[in-house]
Image 1 (tube, helix red, strand yellow):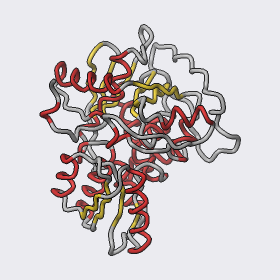
Image 2 (image 1 turned 45 degrees about the vertical axis):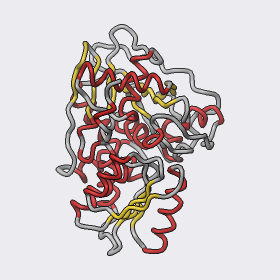
Image 3 (image 1 turned 60 degrees about the vertical axis):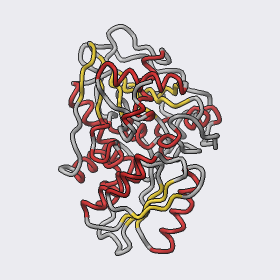
Image 4 (image 1 turned 120 degrees about the vertical axis):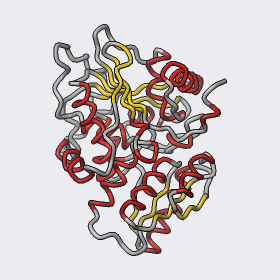
Length: 333
């Protein structure tokens, strides 16, 4: 995969997804409001690209496993394209997301304690019915679709030095890394010095994925779900325990294969934040900006607010707010 795959995805899904706004909240700091996307998150970009890349969809429609947001995206795209959607979600999925799936007409099966168990059930169902499987993060078409967010960030900001993005299974961060790989450093600014890679994290020679050049990517994870962080430490994807406030959306037990290859680039720095920082970031987004983010949607901002990542003077930074499927009643203490 490379930048050209993202460009192809942008052409394919044009007119089906929103070009979400960018807000400059302070000099050189931008919010990319992807939580205003159809279905409440960026996920619809990858869902449409996967379905449209498949050609004629089978009579049995599509099947997906999700912590909620991917399922909502697949259900939305399926409704637009006029096909059946069957969604498997784990027991930790929030009632708000389950209600959203029902409203979109999806056929829902709630099974398993965590995402990986729902994913096993979905894969079995797709094999039985012949439905098209739409993976939440580890399919090339899905990653390329998510990467169209990166294209928009570059166009809408005029260029940034750094993009801060949350990581679960890693498809979104990988897509943005690819989608910004054709970008030059922001005008008038010296690009930040790339971080020292975690030992064992270099891209293997001959890798099929090209992260290219472009802005630094700050990949933010909850401390309690460090899928990328532990993979980079080990030199390969490894399973991790899943828990915490963002588990329903960032609850992959292991980083995706494609994401690991892309995010092993020296352009990428892995950062961890506490659950307390995520909760505070979510409340601050509401109090200061009236932005209603779910915990996963506020995770990238938590890195800046908590000091886990501190921009250098003059550094231009885009923070991606990626999901809004939440209960508004929980936005204040």
